[in-house]
Image 1 (cartoon, rainbow, N blue to C red):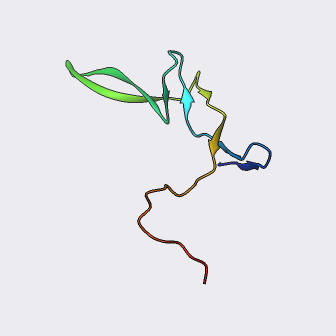
Image 2 (image 1 turned 90 degrees about the vertical axis):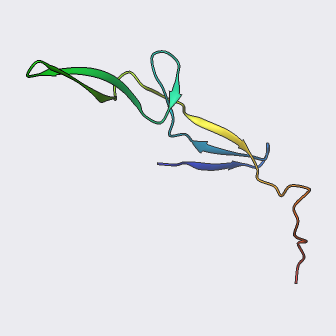
Length: 78
């Protein structure tokens, strides 16, 4: 769920992030760990998704979007 708030005093947009921190402090959308499965004497490596001990990044403050000075199109009001 994305939360969008506009603060008029600081001209910033606040958005809820979908990123998480893991135990090591790495930041990502999803975390996986490699596990070894032994079946019939053969080793097989699988990725297992980690869903525990993740801390959400929270709300991020972004600047308001603006058009760059070098934008090649002239904007006018008709």
